[in-house]
Image (cartoon, rainbow, N blue to C red):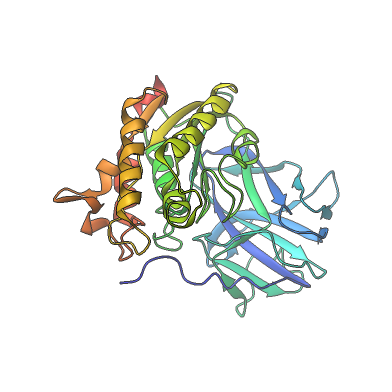
Length: 367
């Protein structure tokens, strides 16, 4: 059985088209804003209209929930190359764990979109300006990528705070069901919401498929994007760090000189130090098994074991979540539990992500 999302089908550019994307909130609140990114484009991008509302399914908006989005009081905005823009807040009552539909109308050729291709949610693309239409055209094309949409912020109660999950494809939810909301950060958010002690804590998923801790490749490295993807998020109190398997599989096989466990640990230490300097506590997540995956090597397995031993015993993290123990095969601990293996031997499936979310001691966040 194959693993991973279907091809994202995002066009090379949009031109006089509207894209409607579905994003799940973690916490509830009474006002919402969006941020749009043009980080990877060399040209300005004109957004001719923006709109949001409560998602009713199949790209439709619940009646009465649609809101126009403005930027400095204007209905349009130009996103400069390499920049991020924030919208004005919009009055909209949002419950925890709610799906929002965010629509952007692009009136001119955009060039390649700044995108998150492993979005794991169906988005819809239609011709013309249909951003405010409650029901999207029936002939709309679909994609599983996010384009330009960097975040959705909800104005939550004063005691609210945020956990950022920083990671790679395993955090991204690569092998989970599209539109199923089954990535472990989403399932952790659900657990937090159901516990009276922690329902004020939200989770932001900052996983990028293929991402490395130390070197750029599939996006900026975790070290390089730390300020953008962790410090820029509102109310961050905790960081969950799950990264390194791509460093092991890419640098470990092809790097000159090859990767060492000490180098990867050094990257972790930098993230811990930078987090602590901003009052952010860090949970270290052990690296999950990958025996049988086509790039796995014996040398890589030795690095994984050494790194996991350091995560568990060094005392440098404020807490540890043992994802390795949660998803490994009890009979063969170097590989994924067959019940959690979608077929590629590295990305946990829906059940595996549930086991990872269940591995957290929620009392850590209370203490």
